[in-house]
Image 1 (tube, helix red, strand yellow):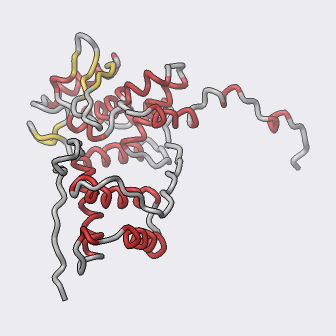
Image 2 (cartoon, rainbow, N blue to C red):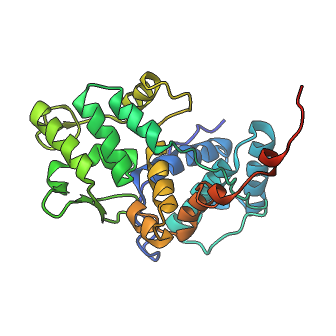
Image 3 (tube, helix red, strand yellow):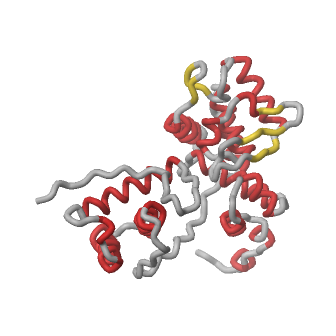
Length: 286
């Protein structure tokens, strides 16, 4: 029986294909799923695998492993990457009915809940972490990689570099956040990154998650709280305050306006105008 081949997927592409920059996270996902594909067809040469076999493979994963729509798309894209970008073939269509992405509404916190989180901890770094992520609408990775020199205190703005999609952007710096930053700087004296585990060494993703989760528990918040909920809350609160959706898109660094539009389904801006008829009902509930 032939030995199972090993394969390493990189961001390199066929010489006739335009150069496309893939994030490390995307490369890791494609590599993981393509290894599964290679293992499945270990006794065949990859260029000889026909589309019908690929269709059957994906359908089998759906039936046997019940993989999510998101994972279905990622696995298909990993396979397409190899055949189209590496081998340089024309775009191929896999006839399994591309799954529609589920539209799950993001969870949000109220302004009062976020304030209670900050008040519930005496740790200046933790206060600052929550304030920066929320008031700047940052992703966790952006907060981790944020350098001190990116904070422009005179212009009251923060430069987010190398964000998702490799696009830089500026976000406003809230006056109250600046207060927390200066108190934290004075106390901890970070060297390179705004949030450091040790001098010059950035905070880990796990540390950020644990700080936010534990601070929410200490504040008595019963919701599932995680770093990205602060970003969701930032977008939703700005929408409720009347900020233009296009500007929110720019602040969040979304490439597509469709991504930002999800917050219109979360905002209470229109719901606050709604009067439930149940509240006008008069009856004896005894």
